[in-house]
Length: 330
Ligand code: UDP
Image (cartoon, rainbow, N blue to C red; front, side):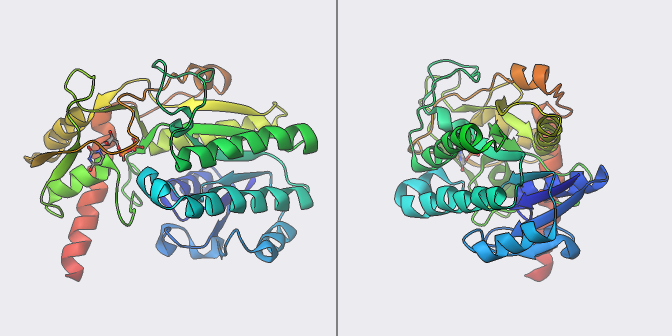
């Protein structure tokens, strides 16, 4: 398959590109390198361009006939989206419309959209299945919710078929340690905890321990990046085979608290990680856990790395590499 991977130099996108190559497919990466890394993908695959640039989109769609398009290029920080909604609506909505309209102009179909658990807002129940009401509570969640609606309308009106994959908490790294998570600034729990374990940070802030959960800290469903990428390939295969548009919640169905994540990181790294109890972070639901049975039954998705220790172990191998690189360049 020839696949356009938009945002392919970022965390999830670069793992997707690697998997596509390993399975004998032909990815083309479209990335403006605003938060991705040039060295995360083979240079020959990279088209360095911005989704705001319709000419660049026309050029890439004119040069290739894509079997599918995967879209990973978006801003992802909830807190920042509250402070700077314009940035989120411009990039996550307007730029995605540019991409979809370029697909229409060039007759491209089969769109895999990186959606999020944040479209559900404060859940009525967990685990969260696809029937759960969608009520986002921040601009990030709204931006993804808006595109899910756009995709339903584009399918009805233009026949553009899509699959919306609602990620819970993507984590972990390439099991062979070639690539991993490198957000700048980093805001995600697992990489931050591991930076504290490696000495790149003094401690980890625990955002609230007065939630209505067994140990008082927030519960999330961490899903290994490789399992996430597997789901993308399965979803694309299904669309190409003629299946209708779809949406799937992707997680392991196991919730882990912030404290449990830190405990696991201590066990994996063999270190003691200093913890500081801090205030709750605005917009954090107490508990987000996926019911991914639809992905398991329809896509025949079977997660391979569904235990937290394995996810943390792979992230730890990557963090050690990053920490030793930081030491060398210091
Ligand atoms: N969290 C934390 N300290 C941090 C970063 C995150 O306690 O320095 C908590 C956060 O409040 C949430 C969980 O860890 O309950 C996962 O947060 P993350 O930002 O990794 O992902 P999100 O759930 O926001 O997508």
